[in-house]
Length: 440
Image (cartoon, rainbow, N blue to C red; front, side, top):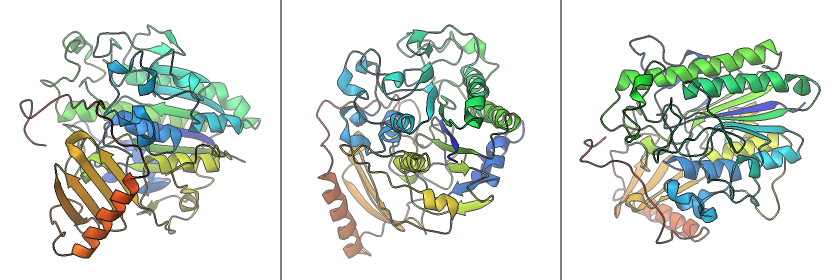
C-alpha cells in the first residue's frame, strides 16, 4: 500500500541546529527532541543539500523536481514583492508539480505554511496541484500580525484572507494536526494524503511564542537587524519541533504512523544566529554552510530505524523520490532533473553516483559537487576542495590537482549550457550588508 506523505520544510535552518546533527542544548534544554526521535527511528542523511542557498529558488525545485533555473521565477534570489502582478516571476499553473502529479495518482494534496512562488490571480498553491492551502504567500511575515515586509496582511485559506489570532508556527502546526485527523478515515480506506508542511520558522523576525510585544516594533523592520539572539532563535526551532511532535502524536492516535513517510529538511542553510558547524558560510552562499542541510526520513513500514547515509542528494531528488513512492509519473514534456532515492530509503548502504550543480547570480557563484570533490567559484576566485576531508573548505587544492580542477570546471561549464542564462533584470535581495553585521 502506498504511504501517506508529509513533507516538512523549515525556513533558514542551519546544518547543526538540530540535536541529531550535533546541535548544542539551549539554556532551556533540548532544542529538537521530536526531530531527534524522528531521525533515530528512521534515516539521517549527512551529505544532503538544498537546490539553492536562498528560499524561493529551492521551492521552485521542490515543486517541479527540476533545476530552478529552468523557470524565470527560479532565477530571482529570492522572489520579492515585485513579483505581484508579474506572472513571469511565479510558478506557472501549467507546469507539472509534485502535488499535481500525486493528485493524478490518487492522493489528496494540501499545503500548510509558506508558498513563496508568486501571487494570485496568476499563481498560487491551488493553481499548482494543491487541493487545500492554509498559510502565507510571501517570503516572510511577522509571527503575530501576519503582515509581510510591505505591510500587507498575508494569511490565507485558499485565496481568502484569514485573520486568525496567534503565533504563526502554532497556527501552522494546529492546522496540520487538524488535516491529519480530517484525512484519516479516507487514508484508512485507501486514499492516501500528501501534506506539505512548510514552516516559516526559524526565519526572521526573531520572535518566540512570548514575544507578541515585538510585532509593532518590527512592522517596518521585518529583517530585524537590531534584534534576536541565539537563545531566541533556538526557542523558535523548539516551537516548530513541538508542533512536529503534535503531528506525530496525531498520526499515532489515528493508527497511521507506520504507514506515513515523513521527510524533513530546510530550504537552505542557516542565517545569522544558526549553527552550521563545521561548515563555513550560510544563506546566500554556495559554500557548504549555505547549501548543506538536514535531511531526515521516517517511515516505519519502509525505512530501517537508526540508519544513516552519505548519499549525495539535493532538494529536487527528494521530490522525485516522493513521486516514485507515491506511484506518480513525470509529465513527458517536462522531464525531471531530480534522481529518485527510493532504493536508498529501503537500503541505506546503497549509493547512486550523482553530480550536483549550482549557480547564483549573487557574487557570481558557481559550484559542482561530484563524489568527494567540489569545484567552487565566488567573485571570480576559483577553488577545488576535497569535501570528504575538508568540509570547512579551507584547503584550496586547485594547484595541487590541476587535472581534476580543469575537469570539474569543464563539467560545470558544459552543464550551464543546458539551462537558461541569468537575465540582466534578475533580482538579488540580500537584506543586509557588512554595515549591519561583520562577516559570518
